[in-house]
Length: 198
Image 1 (tube, rainbow, N blue to C red):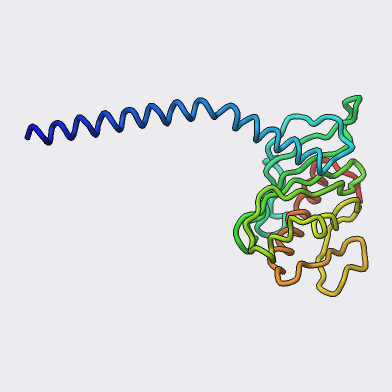
Image 2 (spheres, rainbow, N blue to C red):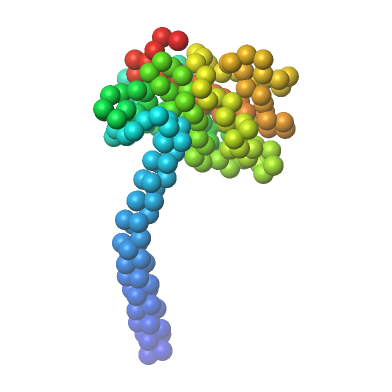
């Protein structure tokens, strides 16, 4: 009995010390992690909208927007105003997630200027098959969306011949479709924000 009580006290002390240590480490790292995440977002915003001087506050997706207008499996997370040096709105950065990736969710940020031109697309989170779907992050694929003013994109396996066409990733049609639909969702949402009639 005496040995059991000693073991219980010992385990309680170890658990208490471990819990306090974890709490301390969490408090110590919470702020640097938040700063790092904010910097990562800002870098993504700058990558997809290089002309912008500043970015507004991140706004959650407009709840009044009819989500059934979006491609299947896509969700708008938020939007951010992109502004010029004078603080004038020159477009938006739109954050989108698609639940239709081969390996799970794919999150991206995209910049759309006030004329409806896609300034750039940046993949934020992706877990597709290495050597196939992961190529969606590569410049060769993702740059196909940039600097194009279209109502929506479509992918092709036979070689893009029009502005709205994107060359599909070989062996990764599901990933190609998911990313293309996510960009199309962002374009649809841009229209709901009062975007240009393209």
